[in-house]
Structures are given as structure tokens and as C-alpha cells.
Image 1 (cartoon, rainbow, N blue to C red):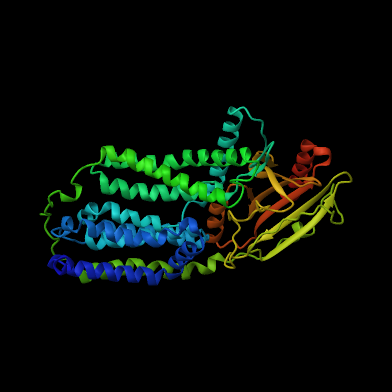
Image 2: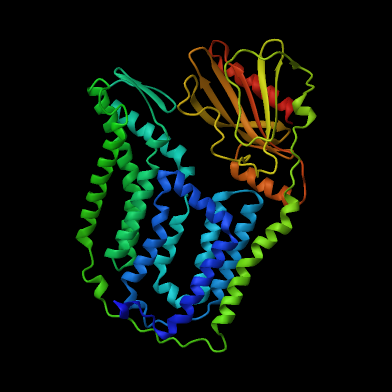
Length: 499
């Protein structure tokens, strides 16, 4: 055991450098690493992140005899990718895209290992090293399309089963009761778990990249299909038991049991192509010479410097991030030729988002239609809220009164030849239906595309432009479910106020 723990002479200094680079990265980018750990702590979906780094170390330890005779050597390519990852972190910090910052800090850490150990060594340890990227709590962007897929899959199978079902968005009703596809039904947790386990299984059981790639792809696609079947099974259990079974917490238990069976089946099938004695293959001795003239003090100093420059650059650019935290007069007190201010109607719903620094809400009428106008400014986005944030819901999915039954993107014409997309949603309650349009206004640009909005934010802040960045929401009631009339009225109002 002690002999196994003993490091060969050529590994002693590189190992100390790897430890130092890790400590420097964790210290310098503490806030970003803390944000990763915070998500692990509060979300069961990403709790596996606590195990990723230990698993990576274990995978290296498992095949340590393959690495004992390798010769670590400084890599300029690793240093270059530290700079690339650091620049990505800086841009993400400038426009407050947390997930990109998190990817970037892991990239900086992995590139630091690359710089210290060299391309040849990292190539031999490629999978355990890349496995560290699974520490990033990524995947929430997949939740809406996965929920839509699950709803389509379940409703299609119900109809193929010969039963009638009525669907509104993510809500559907059978003769036995009503169901809705919530975030927990998206299958993201199953998808992440399957992908992570599948990647480790492929690495441990296959030697060829082709086999590994096929199995990893299978471990990604299988839970997507399986989640649709799981949701259909739960609905059928509830339906045929008159909503006595699988309609409460027990459907979560059924889901995990089903997922366990699916993973067992996937691993069982994968075992037919298992490579035997994978761990007993002879060690390949690295005969590549050490790079002359380079010592590990230089390697550590160069790597540390490339890590340290980015927080300092971020502080230097902080002044460019100033955003005017106000709603312009033209929006807070609109003067529109065909629309006049009016009192607030009793619709029972108003928009509101977390992290808003300043907002303005007003109601106008053209003599026939009353419409609401809401403008939210998130300031410099350092107060826990962001202009572009997937958590800025119009209606929480489990709201007691309202539910969203339609959510699409439509084209809006702002001026001659200038068009962009806006998000159009239908909110439904037992009393009335509301049509809602919303988009981002960055400077004088309008878009519902989150990526385009972030690019505009980046350009504004690099240019020192402090003009407001707003989330705009227009909404009106649909009289007698007249969807076309409500849409036309909101189009007219949008063109008049935000041209």
C-alpha cells in the first residue's frame, strides 16, 4: 500500500505544481466556484457534482500503474487555453452569464493541469480530466424542450391507446382527471444521471473510442425515451386506479424504480461488448524526452500568472458595466396619440420578476381595449436578478389561479424593414384569458432571443453605453376569446411605444 502511494521521482514536482494550481484557481475564482457548490447544495438534480472530482481522482488512481513511467513536461498549448478560458470567463462576468463563467473556471483548471503535465500525459488521462467538466451544473436550458417533448409523447401514446384526451399546453385532461408536465417530469435528472454513469461505465469497460462514444450516446438518448414511457406509465396507473395511485409523491418513487431498471438494462446490454482484462494491459513507457531549459518553477509561475490576470482585468472593466437603473419617462408615463392612461382593471394578474431594481407599470386604453404596460430594469444585475434569466416566469407552473396554455415566438415589425421576435403567451384562469407579449429592450434594440440580448448587452458595456436595459411586458384581456383582436391591439401598442 505504501509503495502504491509513493510517487516516482519525475512526478513529485509536477504533483506539487498541480496542487498549487488547483489552490490558486479555487482562491482566485472563489465566487464562481462557490456558485457551483451552492447549486449542488440546493438542487438534487446537480447534487452529483460533489462526487465528480473524487470520481476523477479515483479513475486516475485505478489505472495509476499506466501513468507511473510517464514524463510530465510543460505545455505551451495548455497555457494558451488558460488564456482562452480566462477570456471567456471575463466576457461572461461582464454580462453576468453564470453558467459560462462556471464552464470557464473548470476550463482554466483543466488547462492548468495541461500546462503543468504536458500534452502527452493529459492525453493519457484524457477521460478523467474531461470528466471534471461534469462539475458544472448545466442543463436547465433543456427543461422547456424536454417538458414539451414529454407532453407530446404522453398525449400521443394516450391517443394511440384509443383514449380521448384534451390538451392545453403542458396540461392535459382525461376522463379520470387532469395532469400537467412540471419541471420534475422533464427527465433532466434522469438524463444527467444516465449520462454521467454511462460515461464512467464506457471508460471502465471499453478500450476503443468508437465503443465508448456509442455507449455514451446511448446513455444520453435512452433516458429521454424512457422518461416519456415513465410519464405515460404513471398517467395510465393513475387513470386505471381512479387517481388513487401514482397521483401523488408515489409517482416519483415509481419513476426512480423505472429509471433503475432502465439503467440496469442498458448496462446489461453494454456488457456483451465488454473488453476483458482492460486494467491488466501492459504499461506503455513514455520515452519522450523532457523539454530542456524549462523547470517547474517557471511552469508554475507562468501558469499562475495566466490565472491571476483575469480577475484583475474584470476589476478594470467594472466601470464599463454601469447601467442606468431607471425606466425612461417615455415608458413610465407614455404619451401615445391613440392610447390614453386609464385605471387598473381587476384582472387578477400583473407581471413581476425577482431582482428588479426599478420598474414601471401603467394601463392605457384606445377607447375599446385596455392594455397593461410593464417595464422592468435589473440595474447592473448584481442584486441576484438578471434581465435574461430562465427563472423570470410570467406564471409559476403550480400557480393556484393562472396557468400558461400557449407560449410561442412571433415576428414584430418595429419600423420600416426592422423586425424581431417577441414571445407571445396565453394565460388562463377560470375568470378570463390574457394575451401577453414580452421581450428584451437593450438600448434601442428589441428582441425575444436571449442570446441576441446578451450580445447586445456585451457590446453596450464594452462601449461604455449606460442606456437602460429593460424587460418589456404588454398584456390585455381577450374578450370572448377573440385572440386575433387582442394580438392586433398589442401589436399596435408595441409599435407605438417601443419603435
